[in-house]
Length: 497
Image 1: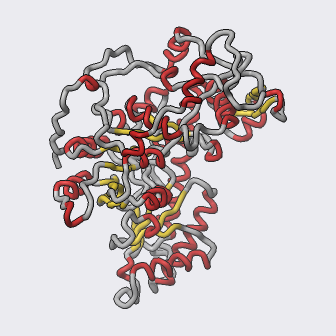
Image 2 (image 1 turned 120 degrees about the vertical axis):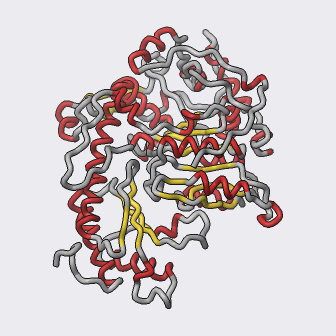
């Protein structure tokens, strides 16, 4: 379908065109840093994302979002203690304001780690030839190290969603996100999906036909979406799908919370068990150009807040992520963090700085991401190969995911012998426990429904992120055995007794 026409954006001061410079490249990072002012150091040194930003490139400034921010968000004031930190960079200033212990009372002298040396990221190579990095507890004060901070979804929801509101999301959504939304008294409205994820036509229909009296709530203006490697379905929106979604958001003046933890886990195209592999990107530029463009990259109104994380590309225990949004939204976000998470663990930030900046740099991190692309492609292929060999295609169907960690399997539950007498959820529970009884665990699709009582389809979520290829094959074999027993199918492996 053709994308809906965009709303007219009034030309006010906040949306005037900015001045632009040459786009920053990987090779230009060092030169840009050499011209930047020195970062202040010392205990609780003042830091701001403004210190690390590149000038705008090719876009107007963002709209203001006062008409969408909640009263809670607009009423938050700057923390005077946090604001005072900016004076710590003053030469000769003695700090008697911060209630933090001296580093001389930290019970360690340094933290050390052995990290891979790009471009070889294997465990054996790291063990033999890895780089040992060490961070001393006085490094920051001595000008040897710097590190910064960030946060996510809970605060974004508090900034925009008020009790009684509806929020739009995919009809199947990350259950932890749904569990975050529910206690706020906000209702989720599931937008229909296909193999490419959220359908803009479905979202447009919902919004164009919204009846406040029937719904008992005002028209939704907030969309939460995972465009790449969506959890749980594994769907990835194409570039055109993202453009259509963004135009629909403009048409209905939506604000978008773009959650992209799997963005850099985009894989090689799936070619099948006997087809030749597609060559990996041969350069950093080729790798980056092969990635689907984010909604943020298409944003010309400042209506997108993108959330990123290192939990999927480095390690989940780092508890470190960041947002990218307009200056107004970031400023409100910071006010929320000042009274909640404040910042990620300083120890995590220190280790990440030693790894990503001092050791790998931008080029090394991109080498690591290309390595992950290859490894996750292999894992995805192993799981899908196993599905093709062991799952009964009479009742099971799927599409190989293009990104992320998850494989979404559809089950034709209506072929169950008792489909006319028991419910779909009862059949789903039977399949779930039959797998456990045979020694395999997978997730029930109903756990991820944005609206608990909606949906006619039955799905199960599997992941290729954890187990070995051999274990995945065995697990899928057991899943197939469970399906054959429950659906009273011949005990064959896709036509082979």
